[in-house]
Structure formats: structure tokens, C-alpha cells
Image 1 (cartoon, helix red, strand yellow):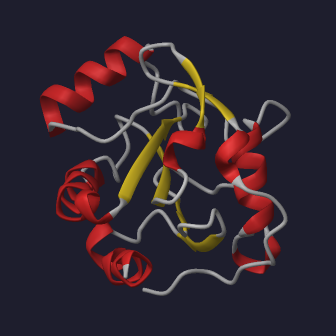
Image 2 (cartoon, rainbow, N blue to C red; image 1 turned 90 degrees about the vertical axis):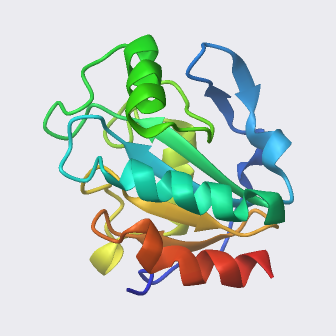
Length: 169
């Protein structure tokens, strides 16, 4: 599976303010120089089992510089109705998630988080769409902060691993 076409970079992700799943505000500056896989996630989605693949991908490549950053969103079929604490507990007990989880955000509409507004402008979807179509849309960001790939929800972590590995080299 190949990533969708991309536009030229216009900004970098490191100054965006995000809230961790534990409620702490921070910027993404801690991830400068890392390869990032940014994913909007949900606990009650048909794609939720991808958490397992994301965790395996993270464990295999974290030492080489991969960071998986998961942003829960309840915008698709109300499939992430829980609180941040409930989401964290679900991810920990069900999938043993060790990669960073962030507070629930909007990825579409007027309240779109600025990070996702930027990601969508840097890597539009099919036919230039600025919308996230469903849970588990994935954005691959290189070590310089440039968005280099956007993968549809159905693209599994195993299917995109070759792109991750190419960026880690």
C-alpha cells in the first residue's frame, strides 16, 4: 500500500501545543529529529485492533528513532466516547500501549486541532480532500518535520512498515 500524494512542506510540527492523555500541556519539540507516525485513534472502531500493530511497530523501531503519537477522536460514529482516563486504561490493559497517547481532539470541522489542520494541509487526502475520513488515518513525518506520507485507515502498521524503515535509515 502506498501513501497518498503530498504537497510541499510549509511549516514544522514542533511548536504545536498538545495535551497528553494525563492532561499536561507541551509542544512536540521533544520529538524533533525523530520519525513520527501520527494517528487519530478510537477504542470502539473496527480498526481498533491496529493498536496491536502500532505497538509492535513502535517496539521494533523506537530505539532507531520512531515515535508513534496517538490522538483519540470521537468524530467518527461516536467510537471514542470515553474520558481520557478511560481511554488510557483501555489502551494499557487491552493492548499494552507504551507509545505516547494524547488527549481527545477534533480532527475535522471548526474545532480541528491546529496540528491536524497542518497535517491535512501538508498531506491532503484523495483528490486533495482536507478531511480525515475515519479513525486510524496515519501521517508519516520525517526527521526534519516534513510530512512525507498519509495512509488511509485500512493501511495496517505492517503494510506501512517499509516506509517507516526507509525514513529511519
